Image 1: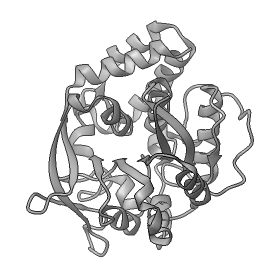
Image 2 (image 1 turned 60 degrees about the vertical axis):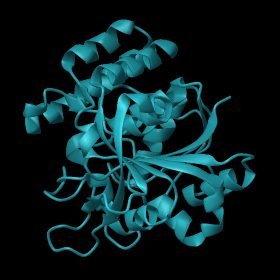
Image 3 (image 1 turned 180 degrees about the vertical axis):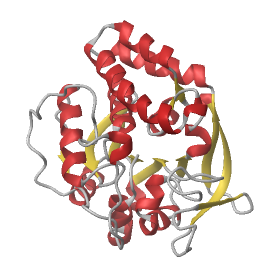
Image 4 (image 1 turned 45 degrees about the vertical axis):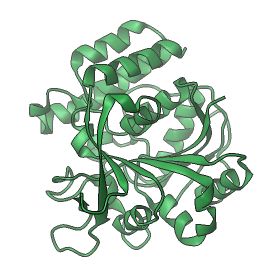
Length: 305
């Protein structure tokens, strides 16, 4: 059995693939899936998480998180992920009921009951984790590390200054980054290099297994947005799986220790992550071996039905 992990996500195509990668890796023991609003509304992201976990045959609890950021109105990314938040493949209806616990309550339960520290993997807005750290700071000792997708050292993808996940709830992000916990940040600096090409998609599809075909169909939809708006990339950046990949293959990434602050009040810079190297307490990822990253995903898809 692997080390315990709580996935905190807003599926979302790349969130779904992050769940697939976590499911495939024997080093990772998914103890629960929490959802946040972001890529779509909380109703849609929670349903999507339940569908993916049903597809994967994993009956761990899926718990609904906050429907909006701590202090702001919700923004969503329907133009990237479609009306459902997970347009593309036909996914099964959930086989198991949604958890009766909220995401916050499930996080507390898992942390309190775990015999070893738990790794948190947030790949959406940081609302749930921020709420946990604000209200139950006594549980910090039960958190081994936070491996998150969000932020950027230079520029954003939703505004010129801000990456989407941080922009959705910058106050929660500030709480997380100032927590003093070990953090690995997979920001745009690295995720824009974790590109999946059309050729890679066909490699996944050619594996022939149901999960590999489903992931290829997710990427068929995902690449349409990137071809229209980010044609110069030469592929689709798989942001969220980086936060999982680093946990099992840190050697394929290049990191630097840095301090990360979050801008919450700027007229044009709200949600910006200010990365400096003077006081270093966060592992910020800046590069990835793309071929090794694709191979990691390919092996995961071969390992699943």
